[in-house]
Amino acid sequence: MDECNPEMIREHERRITETEQSTGSAHQRINSLVDLIKDFTIEMRSSNKNIADLVSGVAALTKEVSYVAKASDRHEADIASIKDNMETKDTVLKLYDKIERSNEEQKKGQDAFMNLLRKQKEEFEQHKKEPAEQAFANQKALIKWLLVGFGSVLLSIVTTAVAFFIFK
Image (tube, rainbow, N blue to C red; front, side):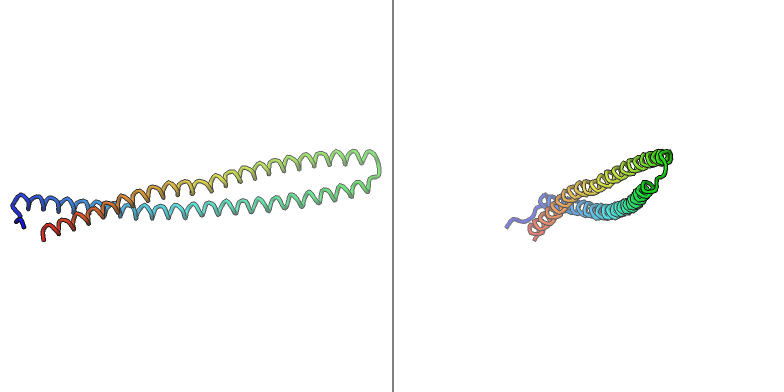
């Protein structure tokens, strides 16, 4: 066996120092990953709350559609009743004009409501995609960071083991 000369001892000291620095850097990266995961979890909770708000908005719109449908049923019943009770042509024409205006107003209201419902649905669909796209990008970044971090930790361990083996 060769004895360690001063130059070899300096080389071993340099390698040990580099290994310690690399290990410290790997620990810092792992701590950064832990912080990133915590931030990601907080953001996902916030997104889930926003989705729940959108769902309750859609539920409210559905309730409004129910009211419009019931009102339409009452209008149709009223129209049928009016037709049955018509007495003069003049009265019929006046009622017909009122019905036409009422139908136009109802159609405008339904169109406005349907546009609003479509807009809400599109926003909801878009909002559902955002967290998934962001989560996928974050997942890729996490995997990359984890692989680099664990690789450097393993390299540090192997280097330290080699240094210990050489010094023994």
